Structures are given as structure tokens and as C-alpha cells.
Image (cartoon, rainbow, N blue to C red; front, top):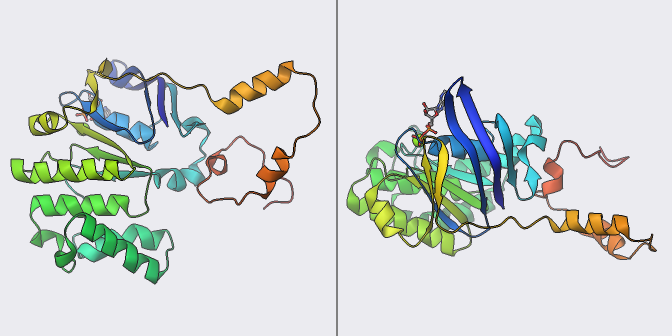
Amino acid sequence: MIVFDKVSKQFFNDTYGVKDVSFVIDSGELILITGPTGSGKTTLMRLVTKEHTPTEGEVIFDDLPLSKVKPSLLPLHRRRIGVVFQDYRLLPESNVWENVALPLLIAGKSSDEIEERVTDLLKLVKLEDKFELFPNELSGGEAQRVSIARALAVAPPVLFADEPTGNLDKESSLAIINLLKKINQLGTTVLVSTHDVVVLEEMAAARRLELKNGELVLDTQPKKRRVKKKEEEIEKKKDKPKQKKTPAKKVKKDAPKTKEKVEDLEESKPKKKGKK
Ligand SMILES: Nc1ncnc2c1ncn2[C@@H]1O[C@H](COP(=O)(O)OP(=O)(O)O)[C@@H](O)[C@H]1O
Ligand SMILES: [Mg+2]
């Protein structure tokens, strides 16, 4: 679901954020991204969210090359990736409940939906009793759990936590790691960037991508890219003599269209006539 195909991000002449990085991450994986400060972990995250664009190569998310996502559809793309930062980035003037509810408000959810979702999320992160507190009334571990709940608010398929335990003591770090594992078990693809030994030990079983000076120097469980079925089919059809149109096309046309469909994000595809 996330593919890096020979991706480089060059900032200046000889400064690379990442350099010639290739990997394939499947849906549902739990991934550690390791490497010392300056090795490219945050750059990698920003390439996934398209805050950065590669200077070479292509990032592909759910079979869609991100170079084809037009700027007006970036917010929709970014809703697919929940992000968590080392410094929590909560709104100081809003309480716990409001911080978690905000992405849902922005996404236009109804107040009933928001009520239900925020209640569930606060239960998940074990903060249901602290919903009225403000960020400055929380411990670091609690603040990070709020930020995780907020990142999950619109149910993104991918959660990217960038050094989430960087400011936390061991006990709070363990709670965060267990929470991230649980979120992964519930079905979210989780990427955790870190150089924290506590995290490395606790997540030793996870697949690890290690960066060094922007280069990928280790992938403990490399995956092969499955060539897109659609592409293969198109290639095959080209070789075959023309067939009668199959009913499959009709089924597709009638299938309910979901807002999150990949095709909707694509720039180059001509819009259907009459659709505006
Ligand atoms: N916006 C930027 N402008 C210029 N150089 C940057 C920028 N972001 C990161 N870099 C450089 O890219 C390299 C990787 O940085 P980063 O991805 O932040 O590493 P990490 O998150 O592993 O600490 C570093 O050399 C850093 O100085
Ligand atoms: Mg970083």
C-alpha cells in the first residue's frame, strides 16, 4: 500500500533527506523506521504525506503515484495518514475532548457521530476520565495519547508516529508502544520512527527499516511489489482479440462510489462527461 520506488529528496547540492530509497509496505503491517538524528526519518514521513515531493523517484500510496495527486486534493490524501509527533502538537486552548473532535468537525461529521467517535477513541487511549482537561494539565504520556486519538479520529488506514516517545520516560513510552501495537492489531498500518532503545526492544519483532545518511541500509522483511493487477490485465487484454463487453463493466458503473476512492484523487484522469 505504500511503495517507495527509488525515492530521493535532495534539499541542497549535497544535502539529501533520503537517497535512492525503495521499499514496499503492505496494508496492516507494523513497521519501525530507525536511524540516528538526521538520517531521514521525518523526511520519509513527509514524503508519504506529500509535504515533500521527491526530487527523484516516486512514492505510491494505495496504487496511486503521489505525483498525480493535485494540490486541491491533498487534504483528502492527508486524511489517509494519521500523524503523531514527538512534541504532541495539541491545541493549548482546547481541552482533550475538543482536540480529538477537531478533525471530525473539519471532516464535517454530525455531532452524534463526533460524540460517539470521540468517546470510543478516549476509551481506546484510556483517557475517558480526563476529557475536560487542557493540554497543560496532562503528563507527557497522556498528551501523546490524546495526540494518537486525534490522529485516529477520521479512521485513517495508516498511522505514522514520528519519534512518539522522544519526550517520555520509560513507563509512558511502554504505554505508547502497547497502544500503537493495539492500534495495529485493530487493522491500521502503523509506522513508528524512532531511535529510542526502549521502543527498539519492545518492538523487536516488528519489521525494521533502517536509515543512515538518508539511505536505506536495512529492511528486515523486504517485500516484493505486487504488480498492479489492473495493469497486468490491461496488458493481457491488449494481446487478446477483442471480446464482447462483459457485464463486469456495468457492475462497476453501478457500484456505490465512496468518497475515499483512489481514483478521485488522481489528477491526470479525465473527468467523466457531464459530471461536475
Ligand atoms: N526542510 C529541510 N531543508 C533542508 N534540509 C533538510 C530539511 N529537512 C531535513 N533536512 C535534512 O535532511 C536530513 C534528514 O533529516 P530528517 O529527515 O529530519 O532526519 P531525522 O528525522 O531522521 O532526524 C538532515 O541532513 C537534515 O538536515
Ligand atoms: Mg525527525
